[in-house]
Length: 280
Image 1: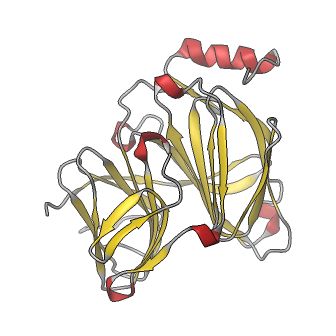
Image 2: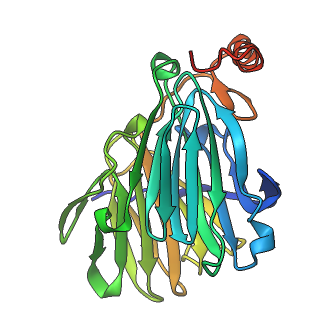
C-alpha cells in the first residue's frame, strides 16, 4: 500500500448561522484541494442559548447537505411536505437540486447539541434536478470495532478495512462521497483505504493526531491525491471525521445558500426565490 501524505491544513473558526446558532465553520468554497466538499460546520454546546434559535426556513439550490448528530435532536420541515427528525447517532441527507426551502429546529431538554453539517457540491448536470431527502436512524448506521480499540461509525460509502468490508446506509451521495466518524485511542493508528482519484480529508474535532507539527484544535487535514491509504496516528484519544469523494473539477459560484457554476445562475436563483418560483 502507498501512503498519502499530509499536504495542508485548514483552520476552523467560530461563527454563527440561522437564528444565532453558535458553530465552528470550515468554508471550503474556494479551496480546490477540498473539492467536492464545500463547507463543514460543527455545532457543539451544552448551553441551549447557543443553539435553540435553530435554523428557521431558508432556501438551498445546487448542493447537498449531510447532517450527522452525535448528541441532541433536530426537526426538519420543508416546502415539499417532508418532516423528519434526526436524533443522537442519526443522519439526514438532503439534495437541494433546483431548490428547496427548509428549516432545522432543535428540541429542548436533551442535554446539549453536538453534530456536523457537511455541504457537498453537485455537478452542473445535477444542479437543477428534483430535490431528494432521507433520514437515517442510529440503528441503521454500522459501528465497527477495528484493531486496538479503534471504532468506525460508517455513515456513507463502502470501506474495505483489514477486518472486512463495511457499507454505510447512504450510498447515493454526490461525488460518491464517503463519511466515517472515527475514535482512535492514544498511541494507536488506523490505515484507511482510499480509492485512486478520490479526495481525502480529515477533521480532528477532539484530541490530536501525529502530524509532525503542532496544529490548532479542530483543524481540517488535507491529504495528497497520490497513494491508496491514509494512516491516522493518535497522540491522544482522538475523534475524527474522515471524508472521501471524487473531485467535480467545475467552477464554483456561491452566494449564501446557493451554489452554482456561474454568477448568472446565482442571480437566477435569487430571482426565482424572490418571485416565488423557487424549486419549480
